Length: 209
Image (cartoon, rainbow, N blue to C red):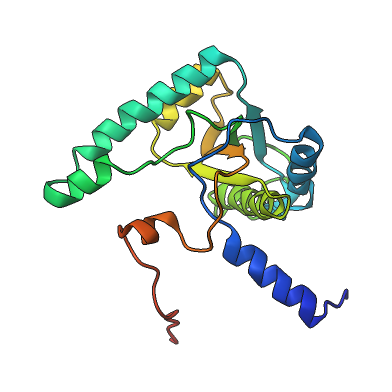
């Protein structure tokens, strides 16, 4: 088994600590070769039954990006209705996507109908395919951070409408809409914590049963 020294382990922890959900991007294009290096890690990611169920769409046309952004704005307005008082005011002033300026935007789907992997593990827990996609996304996120590229995960979307707008296979289910580009700034503290929306747990709680 490959061995890694303390210097590598320390750097790996730094990489994970400095991985951030970026919402404020520079609009200048990112290096295409660097992006491809980051995307190549999908081929290294584990997947249930070796099914590799991720399906990646790169959104480039102004028309489809406009539809996706309108989707976000509509979903965000609906989400705001779920808050009241000071929380509503706070929420309304949060920047919750980088869709208006991120040079690269990716829609990552899970192909729930794939026959690759022959159903191993997914017959009993079909959600494992989507967990596999999430695992691959995290590898991509870390690879991007190592290249100085920021990634932001937009979770306020109508996934059914987006799938319809993108005209994808009916078996494809949206897992992530990712904004990708060089960040305006870097920080090792989540922006929502800096702004006072929420705090990380001070201590990891592990139960024993």
